[in-house]
Length: 157
View 1 (tube, rainbow, N blue to C red):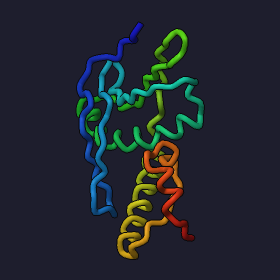
View 2 (cartoon, one colour):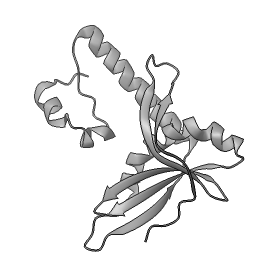
View 3 (cartoon, rainbow, N blue to C red):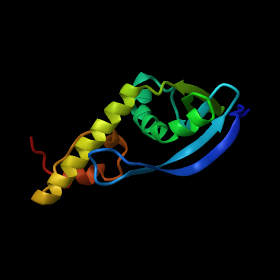
View 4 (cartoon, rainbow, N blue to C red):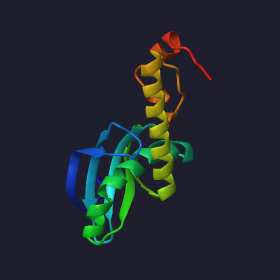
């Protein structure tokens, strides 16, 4: 059974967010944006073997908060609050779909923007010095270059 997710507005749409203090935009894709009688929903689809606990929710909140900043004007124009939602496709013996609503707080957006600005500053400094230090973040756990990073890069304080 697939739950109703309201009227679809966007699917796999490219999002571009300009952040003050960064000379490049942050670019990504939303999974979908939908609307029901009560809200606009910024939806991210995930697959998982286990339930999304607080740690997993903290990992996905920055992305949703950043993308929400791009869609807040549309939601305001439509007179609806913008909310975050995860649709989790559970890989179990009997497949299951779970819906988890995610709070899109200003503090999450501020923290995400600050992390991105710090990361970009490190990239610019690394280019200038021709040295790329390792910066551990929540993204490292899923980065395809993780083994190369650990093997070839040096850490600096």
